[in-house]
Image 1 (tube, helix red, strand yellow):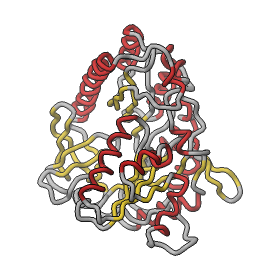
Image 2 (tube, helix red, strand yellow):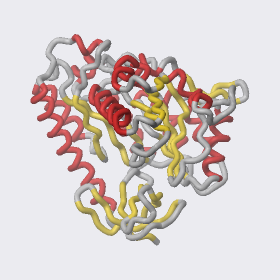
Image 3 (cartoon, helix red, strand yellow):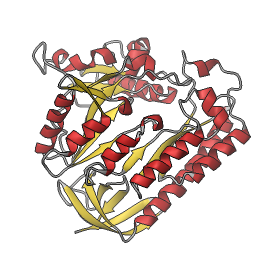
Image 4 (tube, rainbow, N blue to C red):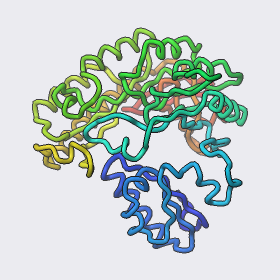
Length: 385
């Protein structure tokens, strides 16, 4: 985004998962409209689907394209012929890692979430199209392929007239030629099946041993009010199943502070539960009141000051967990992929278990071995070779 003030075209792909995300997107769009009025401004994504009126007010001259029209952006912008298929990426310029969207849509009923309203019905990329896209990215020099989806665990791509689930997709992709690895973005714990774990564990290291499993709360009562499709106890059991098959895997979660009705004792219950899971790190969110969701009208809306204080305590735990994760890696050899600027003196990289490592030098493209030599809080440092 550094060049937006001089760009001829600005395409903003918005998020609308929280009210803060909406505010951030609108703030950026207003800045672009005011400071680079000659640029063609196109706004797409979830906020474009959820509240096109707010975008039109922020930037009256912008072209607004909801999620359902996103695949037609290339044609709209004159970058592809009419009728050209969308949704396929052939290159991530200057990046060792490539993101591949394999699934979209959600049929969940979480009481705080607008995603099902803005993402539509469940859909998946056909397996052969996925194989072709990943093969092309690997041939183009991308060392890590991240499979992404709103409900990634609900992937169901057709292959030869039959359904292929995420485990089948991993098994197929793991057999492709090339020096690359696969990473899963985010999975609901209810979709972390034994078959999926076996596919990851049996991939010979091709599938990264790192998992993001959203929890949201460790309080059983709060989970019920959230209408999450599991109990805390089940989350813990599936986590143990994961660790039996993939010992040492990095495991991260989302955790929310200040959900409506959350009492101090429920928060303490959640905090203690999360601490007991021995995770690698947390992504901490404050509850965001979203118009049109069941939670928005629930009684007991938590005062902002209390929600902030709880989020601070969760972030302190996150730092503890990430620091322990980095410290435990010291002395080990990891397979890393550079993620930072290759011209930088200190090169940022990512290990297979999602440990961020600052390297002594840029290793260049591809997957490289690096010894972790020290840690300072959540930061690890490594030496290439």
